[in-house]
Amino acid sequence: MKAAITGVGMSDIGRNTGRAAMLHLAEAADRALARAGLTRADIDGIATYPGKAEGSPGMSPLGTGEVRAALGLQTRWHSAVPDGPAQMAPIMVAAMAVATGQARHVLCFRALTESSSQSAGRRASIPGAGKAQVGGWLSWLVPVGAMSASNWAGWMANRYFHEFGMTREHLGMVAVGQRQFAQANPMAVMQKPLTMDDYLAARMISEPLGLFDCDIPIDGAAVVIVSAADAARDCRLPPLRIEAMGSALRSAETWDQRADLTTMGAHDAGADLWARSSVTPQDVDVLALYDGFSIFVPLWLEALGFCGHGEAKDFIAAGNIGPGGRYPVNTGGGQLSGGRLHGFGLLHEACLQLWGEADGRQVAAARTAVCGMGGGFIAGAMLLQRD
Image 1 (cartoon, one colour):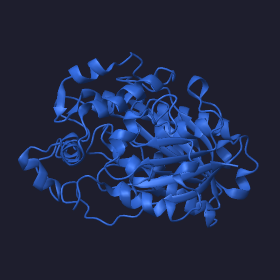
Image 2 (image 1 turned 90 degrees about the vertical axis):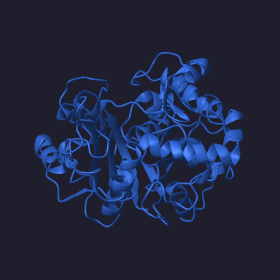
Image 3 (image 1 turned 180 degrees about the vertical axis):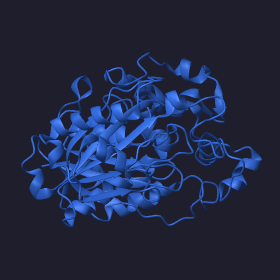
């Protein structure tokens, strides 16, 4: 792939900040540009996921047009991708755009004000919030009380527990480990230590998923700059080469009708990723795995081949994914403790690791990272290398 990541930036994030989404976005963009050694005049492409969404408060308040205008960008290519390989879509299409000469430097962004935009009557991520009718596949879920992704992920977790003997303690190891990472990340929203007892005592959300199995709605923005390979050589930091991407989807586009509820679209995207590279899971130093709910982490581990199907509980219990583990996962705290930026924050952290900028949580000599975004049937995977 003739494309690389040359800069990443994240705004100051928080809960109920009351700060406009555009201010978050501009701050993240300027930080990404500074890291890349670029100016706004260098950006000739822009991409986002999923595009502006009016019906879900704070979920996606900004579109490419208003961001382009606010930042004064002169772009010749743009994209907003609501239907594609999960939240990875804008970064993937940006990579293809620079590889085919449509642009040289593409600013990919995700901005949210979920935390400060929600109210008792208007909630983000809830089917039918503020609407009189619900259509499509959601119309089959809402009547049985499956009102949010926490319910759908709970189904998957229950089935996985039944099939393979996983327990809440195994998921607790995911949540506790990521909180330990978050304590070394000053940008993470959750800094208070989390013990296994704390995890098990927290209120249930959707059996078997409790409060600390769910990611944290925030206000904030993240930007990833994708550059053509030849243009990347002139940037401030060593380019992070996009070695491979995976986006296959071989199942129905529903959460509840997949033939095997112990797998996700991640399994299709993961297989697609490794088929496009000679790199193997054993070569990876850092993992950035989508953790909208804790159960997604073991499923992504299996999907990407770090352990066999049904083996994730033992892989986690052996200490592989936490601080000091062989395959550290979500070293910035992930979305469970760092805050939900729909995968962009995970990729931001992976890039910091490869550039050696992760401070007290830095993984020694990190050169290869894999990132998986998405839950349920949607998924995208990316393999990055610093040469």
